[in-house]
Length: 329
Ligand code: F6P
Image (cartoon, rainbow, N blue to C red; front, side):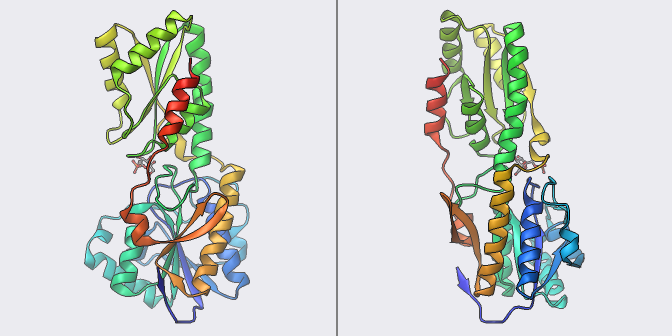
C-alpha cells in the first residue's frame, strides 16, 4: 500500500488479461463515479497493449449507456509480452504521463496487478486494482468479478449434460476453466452434484474416483459426472478418461466447456460487486491510496497491497470438495 500527495484531475481505466463478465459494470462505475467527482476519465484500450501503443481516449457518461448487462469488456483486453520488459513499461508509462493521466484503475487478474505494481515502483504511476477474472484465484478477495457468472454458465451446461448422462446411463468428465486453480471446479461440482472433483491441488486419484463410481453403481447409480479443473494442462479430461478406461474398462465421455465460461451477461451478483468495487477504486485514488487492490472479505470491501496480492497464493476450499463427495452418494 502506498500514498501519493498529488491532486488528481484525470484518471485512466483499463481491463487486462482474460475478460470476465462484469468488467463492463466495473468500467461504468469508475467512469460515472469519477465524473461525479469532477474527474476526467480516459479509457486505455486492450490493457497494457493499448498503453504501449498509445491507444487512449476520453470516456463520457453516455459511453457507459447500455453496457452493465454485457459480457466481455468494451475497452477490449490483452496479454502483452512487451510489457513484461522494462522498455515496454517505460513506453507505456510515458504515454500515460503524456496523456495527462494522474492515476489509473486496473481491472484484471494477478498478471495485470504485477504490471500495475511495476508501474508504481518504476514510474510512480498510482494505480488501484479491481479483481476481474472468472478464476477467483486472487489472494485478498473472497470473490472476483466474473466468477459467479462463470460458475452459473458452467452449471447450466452441466445440468444439460446430466440429462443426457442419465438417459444413456453414462459416465461424463466435464472440464472447466480456472488456470491453475480449482475454484470453478469445486463450486460447480458441489452445485451440480458431481460424483468427483479433480483440482490441481486436490488429492483425488483415478483409483479413488473409480472406487467411488463403482460403489455408486452398487447402490443403484446409473450415471455419474466428474468435474476436472483444467489445471496446468487443458485437455486433462481426455487423459483422465483414458486412465479410467485402462484401469476399469469404464467408458467416459469428455466435454470441455472452454471459453463459453468467459462470456455471457453477468449475474446480478457480479454486476453489484463490480459496481461497488469500481466506486471504491475511484474513492481510494481520491484519498491518495494506490498500489492496492479492492477486495472483499465477506460482504465488506477491503484494500489489500498489490505486492501481497501478487505474492500470496489463494488456497482452494478443500472442504467444498469433501462435502461434494459426501453428498454425491
Ligand atoms: O484467466 C481466465 C482464463 O479463462 C483461465 O481460466 C484460462 O486458463 C485462461 O484464461 C485462458 O486464456 P486464453 O483465453 O488466453 O487462452
